[in-house]
Length: 130
Image (cartoon, rainbow, N blue to C red; front, side, top):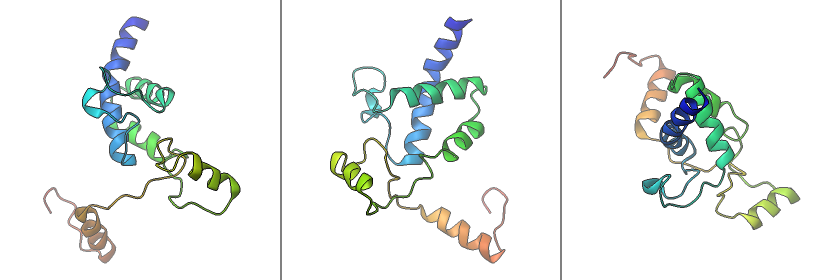
């Protein structure tokens, strides 16, 4: 049974990677096209393994995986660099934020802005295509 679970977990790595990359704006692995083959190694292999195991354990359902990621401390971090000595040191050591010590700024898609405005005004049509 462990062998089957290992195969399922490895199949889940690609799915998990895509979701994580979309949510954070940058992936745990820089070379997404070569994921798992000859590309670069993940910056956080234990996190990727944990997320893949979580995904498989929850019958490969996206909603529990997304909730697990989006309620994590890492996902809810601020994107600004404060004035504390620790944050300045992190900025000096990892200016590109490859280690995800802060949240990255991302552009919001126009559809999300539109839906938020319509929802706030009470005129959002919740039907598909509405």
